[in-house]
Amino acid sequence: MSQYGKAEYWEERYTRDPEPFDWYQRFAGIKDLVQACFTPESKLLNVGAGNSRLSEEMFDEGYQNITNIDISHVVTKAMQEKYKDKGPNFKYLHMDARAMEFEDGSFDGAIDKGTIDAILCGESSSSNAQKVIQEVHRVLGPKGVYFAISYGLPEHRLQYLEKPEYDWNVIVKQVHKPTISTSIAITNEDKDAPNVHYIYICTKGQQKGAKQ
Image 1 (cartoon, rainbow, N blue to C red):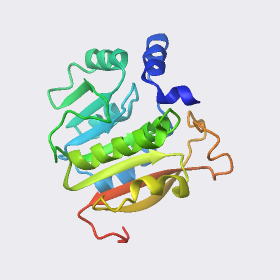
Image 2: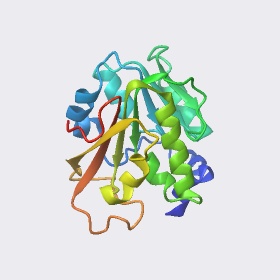
Image 3: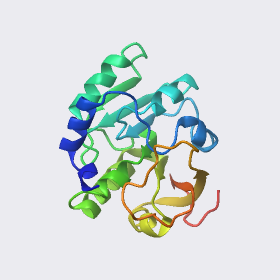
Image 4: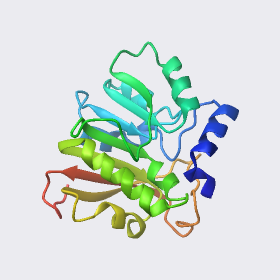
């Protein structure tokens, strides 16, 4: 599914099918882990938000300071219109996650639901994935948390997350895939994987190797 790594694919897809679509998990499936990492006062970034209902469902649970970015002009415009009454701290911006237009340390947390997985399908996949992770690290504050939801097995994802230059501790959690799921694997990487999604929780300022 190499097209998942191309911006043009997403422009065409969101034009063709504007209905909400959630990869992997709805908020209910990850709620306990989200609440353990973030408070309603946390300033959050949703990386590659698409037209997922995740941020809307989090907003309804009290997380009302969320900046959503996506590389698709089409979906960003649609979401800006859909959520125009949510208030000034709930926003959608057109942006390339490889070169974010935010100051260093702008956010308390960043949520990635399948974005790195999609990028890893495309051309220059490793390089582009590393650029996104570097940018996420940069825009997080000193105790910020990168919360990445993935189908990727730890042996395929930790090589990107556990770099010496990242001053964060990484722990891996598992959540069961929904019974009725839009969580098909983007590639064949996890064809033999268990019936779970992996949550990579990367916490800055925490001693590496610490358990949580």
